[in-house]
Length: 107
Length: 126
Image (cartoon, rainbow over all chains, first blue to last red; front, side, top):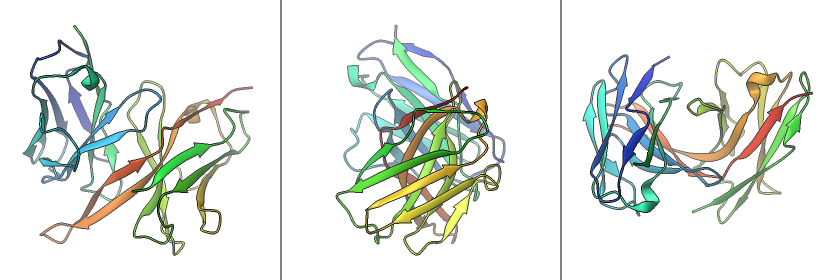
C-alpha cells in the first residue's frame, strides 16, 4: 500500500493567514493526488483532484501543487469556514489510500 | 448532483453484523457513478471499503473483502453495506459516497470521491 504522510498537524492559524499543508508519499504517484475537507457532522468535500485541479465551486483561495512524492495544499487568506481537517488521497494504485489529516485550528 | 444519506444502527455488538443503508436522491442509480463506502476510525485517516456499479460489479479493499458485502437496490434508490464478525476495530464513522473515475493521458485509471453523505458513527461494543 502507498503510505501518505501529512504535515504539520495540527496547524494553528488566524483568519487572513496563508497556510500550506504538505503530503508526502512513499513512492511516486505522478500527479494522482486529491485533497478533501472534513468537518464533524458534515459531508466531506473534495477540493482538488489531479494535484492541482480545483473542483467546480471551490473557492479560488484554495490551490494545490506537486508531483511524484511531494504535494501541497495552500489556502490564501484563511476564512472562518476553512477551519477543518484536510486529507490527501492517492488514486495511483487500485487501493486508494488517505493521509491521516491536518487539522487547521484557530491560533 | 446526488444527495446521499446513511442510516443504520449506531451500536453493534462484537461478532455481529454491521448493516448500513445509503439512500440516494437527486440522481439516477443507473448513472456512471460507482456507489462507494468509506470509513474513518477515531484518530485515523479515512479508509476505502469498497464500491459497486449499477451493473452489479463490485470491488473491495483486500483487508475487508472477506467480511464486507455491498449491494444495490435500484428500485429503492439505495445501496447497502454489510460487515460481518465486527470487532472494536470496526468502530468508525461510515460514509457513503460516489466515485468519479477518469482516464489519464498515460492510460491510467484515476479518480476521486465526488459526492459524500454526512456519515454515521457506528460503535462496536457489548
